[in-house]
Length: 224
Image (cartoon, rainbow, N blue to C red; front, side, top):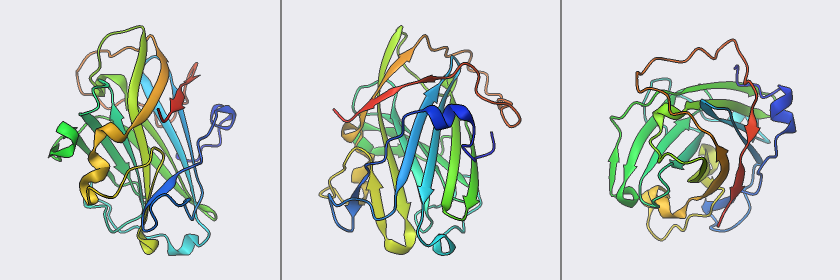
């Protein structure tokens, strides 16, 4: 796992590309392309993203600390409603320097616990066409009901700092202000997750740096 997304399983996976703006032009297509892929095995959820940029030298990335403020940087973010209750979610974000931020979202964003530190891995790579990231989230980091077939809420966002542009896969209205993006009910749906293993809750960092994804499967994504 190196942030490059050059393995065969990433290339073969279906990508979602049609993100739309929340800011500055609500509902308009994103000005820079983004490609997102989602895979899983029996222990991890994997998210790969390619953030294309027509002016990669103008990408903004300054924060390097874990849980540092990313609002002034370019970043990619993921919202996961694993219980599918449309109110609560796990939040993960990463910038082009590999700085990670996470949180627990409660009650449609009215309560956000920024002190929560989940176990997950993310690697990034700057390229001449933008930047890419690989994210691996162990299922034991997420709380979900036991079921052979899972449906979760999910959303993806990207911030392009120099343009003050916010784009999302499942559109988010800007009527609720900046914190509107934490309204979990806006999430789309992640389906096709089968036979997941939550494992134990002992928080050990999984060793994925040198290895690949074994027997990966592809999940399906729908907005409604």
